[in-house]
Length: 272
Image 1 (cartoon, helix red, strand yellow):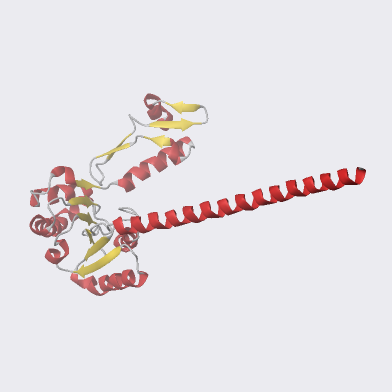
Image 2 (cartoon, helix red, strand yellow):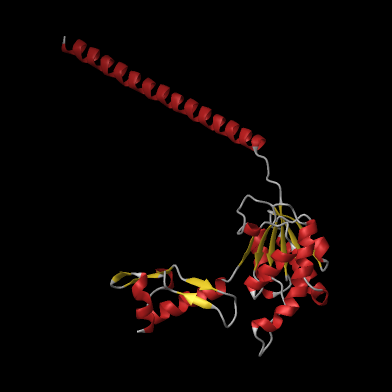
């Protein structure tokens, strides 16, 4: 009797074990099927996305003074997407004067050698008309360099002729929505000259960059107050890049070790 009971229990245990084993096999099969379906759908989605993906039209960017140190530094940054983003193709228009034409072609060759995926073309020329043809953005780096002993006003007459020619070319040949950033000093005056000789470009599309002066003000304030330069906010630079420029701290704020300092106390802290 006991033997029969033992045999029956053993058979029962084996049936349970086999049943559990079958459940595990079925579960594993279901997992594999679901994984296959998910992978298949993912591939289909990626394929459809690739079909729907439409590459943006290249933006034409003019850089004047492209053979100079600043131009040489910024053109590869533009080409790799730092300026307009990692998915915006660009065509670079490089302009400089005839005496540096060989160096300008060298910049073009380096850009070609770098094989930037976003860079769809490079035009290197000493002709303002060719350089401005169809450009959407103009970065005006080139200008007459200030030499030793010269004030900013001394180079203004030189820059008038330079910016008159370039502004006239932009006026006639640039895209209608062209935006202009003036970097060459005196930046404010050069921007004004450009506006006068390119009247069809909206005023709101023309700006100038006096970031160096702004950074100098931030740096001197941070050194005077012994704080990090990133803790100094809302410093304003008025006037041209010249001896008449006025750095304004009346609206500035700064974080100190004692907490946030309000703007009305900042002048006293700097001069105290």
